[in-house]
Amino acid sequence: MESNERQRLMKRAAQLKKATRPPATKAVARRSYDDEDDEPIMVRRRAPSLDDYVWQLLGEEETPTATPLAPKLTGMVVSIGPRVCDVMLEGRLTSCKLSPDLAARQQTELAVGDEAALERRGSDTIVVGVLPRRTKLSRPDAGNCNLERVIVANVDVVVVVVSVISPPLHPRLIDRYLIAIQRGGAIPVIAVNKLDLHSSEADLREDVWRLAPYQALGIPVVLCSASNGRGREELLQALQGRVSAFVGHSGVGKSSLLNMVKPELSLKTGDVSNGYGRGTHTTTKSTLWDLGNETLVIDTPGIRSFGLWNLREDELPYYFPEFAMVGRCKFGDCTHTHEPGCSVKVAVETGTIAEDRYDTYLRIKTTLEK
Ligand code: GDP
Ligand code: ZN
Image (tube, rainbow, N blue to C red; front, side, top):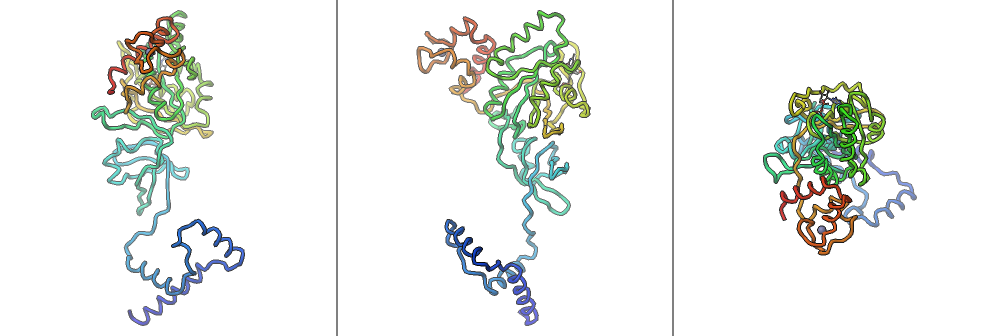
């Protein structure tokens, strides 16, 4: 090393040593020594000498192209596109690129609501990872049932939206969602929309009656009509101060209900076609909306069927809590299908357990592996 270069290095080392020297008060010294008691031996070192600073500078100079450590940045994923996503970062919506590794697995690895680990590289913000999830709502990939698809992450509440008449009420879909919600750790709420469509009080009462088993299980059921504003306050109350996701069949009115609680969103809504009454697919990807007052809602695209991710047959009864409420069956390992002395079957016959729910249990059971 040239002597003037060495001088420059020594000078910088001295400056660095001065700048990083700890205050030498007795109290601080004693406290820091106590603090170190539980730490590994290697951190209990002598004060660094000038040589240490020289070596540190030499180390930095040896790798002049190394990028400085990026600050630890995280942000909530608001929407996802091919190899990109929008993230709420320090209160601002920021367009980010996905790292090549993540982009290759983005359909299974990244979901709206995820807390993304970010790095700034030049003018780009890159998503380099996903933080552990608090809750999730998953289903198997439509093309590969061994692959988990996370629909939304980190939501407190999942609002299962169903409608009456068009499309008609499908309690079986509610049951499937409830299992997935329970497995993922969020709280369920059921919103029944289009209650303006019943042509008679009797029809309305019949549909509401089919929802009684959920209320009996303590699940809030909000009766709504996005057309006339019914249920607005109750729905808003269920969302207030929480992160929620609206899920359900296409055309049931998820976007319309979101517009009802927050008209400023002006979400596009689809037309219901004639016949079966399926809505067009207006919501094609999940998006997180800020309704103000710390209330966040994710609108998800409608789906026609909802598979259950990674559920074993012997776990299934636990997701029907009413089965445990009707007393023990004769056999400890009763599957509640054909066994004599089955309390569940008796309860279905006497109407204590809803026939619709038991029917869902049987149907799901036949699709699961032992
Ligand atoms: P999404 O696919 O679940 O988001 O459903 P949309 O919000 O797009 O609504 C689908 C269709 O149902 C649209 O034509 C809406 O105008 C209609 N719709 C939504 N809510 C109601 C309601 O409460 N009553 C009636 N009669 N129609 C509704
Ligand atoms: Zn039984």
